[in-house]
Amino acid sequence: MAHSPQVEQPSDGVAHVATAACDDWTAPGAHEVSDGVHRIPLPLPQDGLRAVNVYALEASDGLLLVDGGWALQAARDALEKAVRSLGHSLRDISRFVVTHAHRDHYTQAVAIRREFGSRVALGALERESLEQAMAPGPGGRSMLALLRRADAGELAEDLLAAGFGRAMEPRAWELPDQWLTGGERIPVDAQRHLEAIHTPGHTRGHIVFADRHRDLLFTGDHVLPHITPSIGFEAAQAQLPLQDFLDSLERVRELPDMAMLPAHGAPGPSVHRRAAELLEHHENRLALCRAEVRPTGTTGYDVARALAWTSRGRRFRELDPLNQMLAVSETLAHLDVLVSRGVLSCEERADVRRYAC
Ligand SMILES: [Zn+2]
Image (tube, rainbow, N blue to C red; front, side):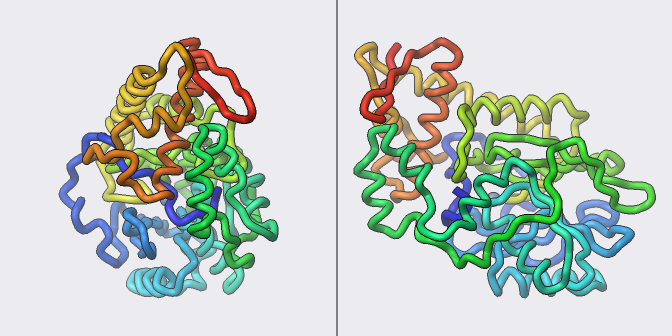
C-alpha cells in the first residue's frame, strides 16, 4: 500500500556499492550531479532510509523535479532552502514527474501543486493504489490478505493492534494531472527531454526517467545502491510482482549504461552494474526459498521464518512487525515466481497457500 511508514525492505545480503559520497548522501543542499541537474536530499521522519533524493532540472519553464518528497514541514523547508540556493523559489517548480505513488515520493508534489499550481505526472498503473489510499477508512487490506495467504494471521493481528492501515490525512493524496504509461518524451528545454520508461515491480506503475543527453537515469526506487527495493508493497497488487521487477531490471540493462541517480542513497556510475547485482541477489534468494520447501507442503510464513534477513543476517523474529510483513511479502513473491517457473507446485485451501516440491 502507498501509505505505510516504510517502503523499502532492509537489505538482505546484497553487496554494497562503494561510492565516495556514501556516508553523507543525506547532507542537505542542492548538489550538482551534472550540468543543470541538482540532487536535493529531503529528510524522512522515522525509518532506516534516512532521506529521499529529489532531482531538480533547470527547464525552459522553471524547475522540473523528479520526485517530490514526503509532505512534511521539515522536507518543505529543506526543499525551499535548496531551491533558493539555485536562485529559485518553490513557485518556480513548474512540473513534477514522480517515479511512484509511495508517500515519500509523491505527497509533497501534490502539496506544492495545491499551493503554486505546478503540474504533476505519475505512472498510470499507480492509479488503483492511489484511489484506494484516497478512499475513506482503513487501508492495508491487501497486505493483510497477503499475510493470511502466507498463514501469518498472527502477524496481521499484531500489525492491526500497532495501528497498521490507519488512514492518513486524506488531503495527502490527490490524482496527478498526467498519467504516464512509458515512452513519453518529457521536454526539459529546447535541446533536451526525459524519456519515461515503465519499470513495474517495486510498484505496478513505477517509472524511471532517462536523460540520454547527459547519460543519466533517474531510477526512483527501481534500482537502489544499498538496499533491495521491496516488491509489490502497494494497495492494488500485481499477480507476479517479483517477475515484473526482474523483467524491469532486464529492461534497464537493455538501455545503454547510464549513471544511476537513485531516490535513496548516493548516485553511482553504472545502472547496469547495480541491476546485475540485484538480478543475482534475487536468483540467490529464489534458491534459498526453494531449499526451504518440503514435498509435504510449506507456507510462505514457514519459509520467511527460516531465512536470514538484512545484510547482517538477522533472524525473522528480530525484525519489527512492519519489516516482518515486508519479509513475508517478499518471500511469497519469490515462491510464486518458483511456481510460475514450474519449480514448485502450489495449492490454496481456506485462503492459505501451501507450496510443495
Ligand atoms: Zn522510496
